[in-house]
Structures are given as C-alpha cells and as structure tokens.
Image 1 (tube, one colour):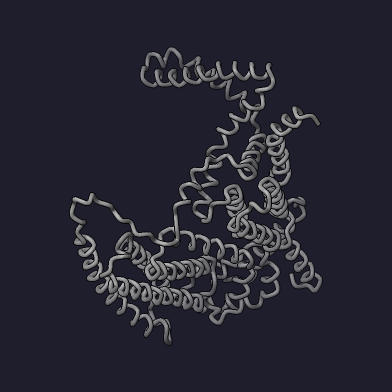
Image 2 (cartoon, one colour):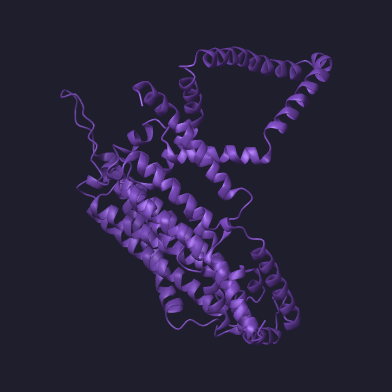
Length: 520
C-alpha cells in the first residue's frame, strides 16, 4: 500500500470503525432487552479502546473502572438485575473517559470528561466531514455549496419566525406558506428518519463517544492542580505594609468553638438516649408507629449528619487548618464526627429493627447501602480534619467507594434474597405478601416451592387488627402467580439470542423440575 493510500485509509478508519460499531450496536440492541448483548458490547468497546490507546497507556483508575464494568455486565448475564444493568452502563462510560485521559484520577472528573466528549462530538463530526472531503474536488465543492445555502437559509428562517411572532399581519400573510413548508419538511424527515434509522444514529453516537476522544484537555487541566493534601495559602503583602491581622481567624475559631460545644452536647444527649433505647433490648411498644420511627426519623437523622458534615467542611477550610490556636477546635470537630458515627450506627439499628419486624424490601436495602456510604464519608471527614486533607480527597475517595459498593451490589440476586428471607421471617403476620407478585420472574420457583409458607403468612395477616395487604386469598394469589408464570414462559419462548441470560434459564429449569414433581 502506497503512502497516499495509507493516509487515505487512516483518514477513513475512524468513520469505518464508528459505522461498524453502530451496525453491531443495532444488531445487538434494536428492539431487544438487555442480556448477553450488553456483555458482548462491553467486550467490543473495551477491546477497541485498549487497542486504540494501548494497554500500557490505560491508567490504574481506568483499569479499575474496566474491571467494575466487566463485573457488572457479567452480573447482567448471571442475575439480570436492574442495578447490574445500570452499573454496567455507568461503568463503561467511566472506563472510556478515564482511558482516553490517563491523567484523570477521580470519578467526578471522569464523568465530566465523558460529558465533554459527547458535547464536542458534533463539532468533531463537522470537522471530520470537512477533512474527509478535502481531497475530493467534487465533494469539497458540493460541501461548500451546501454550507453556502444552508447557513443563510437557517438564519432567514429564524428571522422569518421572529417576524411572524412580532407582527400579526405578517403572520396572517405567511401562515399558509410556512405551514406548508414545514409540513413538506416534516414528511421528508419522517420518510428518511424512521425509528430504526434514528436508533442506528443513536448507536453511532454512543459508540463514537466511547471509542474516540473528542473533548479538549480542559477537564484534565481542571483536575491537575487538585491534591489530596490541603495546602496553606499565603497572601503576600508589600514589605512596607503591616502584616495581616489574625483577628478574622480568631473570631471564626471562637465562633466554631461555641458552636461545636453546643452541638456536641445536644448530640451526646441524643446518642445516650439511642444507645439505651435503640441499641439495648429494643421492643416495639403498643400503639407505636414503627413506620414513622424508621422512615421519617431515619431521614431526619441522615439530614442532620449531612448538615454536620457541611458545617465541619466550612469550619475547616483554608488557613483555619493551619492556625496554631485551632487545636481544640480540631478536637471538638473530631469528637463531633465520632458522635455522628455513633448516630449513624443508631440509624442503621433503626432500619435493622424495621427489617426484623416487617422483613426485607428494596428501599430498606438501599437505606443500608446509603448508610454505609455516609459512614465512609464520616471516616474520610475525620481523616480530612486530622490529616489536613482537601475537598478533592473527600470527593475522590467517596466517589470511588460509592462506585465499588454499587459494583459489589450487582453480584447479589436481591430479588431471590428478599423473598427467601421474608418467607422464613420470624414475624409472618407483618410481611408484605403483595410484594411477592411485584418481584421479578426469578422468584417464581421460590414462591411455588413455598406456597405453604405464603398461605401461613396470609393466615397470620387475617388475624391482625389492621389488615394492610390485599392478597389474603390463597386461591386468588395462586391464580395471579400462574398468570405471572405464563407471561414468563411466553416471554422466554419469544426471546431472541441477544436477550439470553442465565437467570431466565435457571428460572425455566427450576419451574420445569417443579412441574415434573407436580408442584406448580
């Protein structure tokens, strides 16, 4: 191949890769639900990105994001859960952004880079089109005439519409013409851009933004000066001027001391009450609203923890961290962080008692995960105050902790875990039976194999003074369960290979085994 041909080939290669990737995207996802198709797409994108930038140029954060993406997308095939699908999509974008910019270290700046990449994609598309047709005289002339006509026409239409809005008489005279013009344009666009064509274009945009880098180096430049260590900022004054007074720092220190003494005293009282009431021998009193105790009380306490963190971030900013008289301010701040950790444990125990009484549910698991992140945030805040760490340190560590936690959550089949836990719960009269039918199809074998436990829970609900579940008739429950099973079997029968996943295979196999012994 000659040098000219190699140059021409290299110019067209990005467009060829984007079009081929879009074709694969279309074949995998058009009119299909997620399954093995998402896994294949992730392998394709990771392979193309690594091939473009080189494995040695892929940074440590990018490799961790890639590992997270592969774990999450594997769990889409294994568990077919919503959180696995969400994290697979989120993590592949993070991997691509960090791989394109090896200098990036944090999750927030990684997503800024991803957003910037897609924002700059249309500009790059226009510039790339001009580059491709530069060597072709006829195409270059055609592109020049298109721009020559399109730009004035677009501007004229904008002013045309403005004059119509501003002048009613002009609007009456031109309404028919403009309506007919827009109708013709609409018919033409509808004929060209079918839903399938729009999906293909969307696939090309997704693939282009993941495989290639279009963004400027603004985001890496923003992150580059950020450091985990807090640096003292000295304001230099001319030698002939008197040094700045320390009065502002001293007044702020005194105000912070008074504030932290007061809030520490208040929180100490709350923590003593919670330890004696919630931590040790907690029992649900008669006529006590456990729902209010957990739902409203939990979120109020979480808000108080966040407010405490914001106040501490305000107090320990800039040079207050280096002020020689701030020792006791720092001690009081660390004590307040420690007390908030105790409060976080109390909030966790509230949720635990609620689960012990009413069983598991998605939101209760979500509260636990959220509390874990809050506690990690408090620990990193403790380190920030003690070791003089920066806000960038807090954002970087906590964002990666959230990423790791969510990736870890994809490895669990939460639907089956919830149903299995609730079926054998020690308080059968307070389990949400209605929620069984709202779960995914994965729980069908569990419900069929434990219909006796479901009926026992219905019987216990029937003796409650307040009945808050709808399904108390075993026959009606079985009928709805059968209908759910039939919909699942029909879906599996019509399933395409792109949608294949192990969760559906397990469910179908277990239902067949139960049917063989006469259970369903």
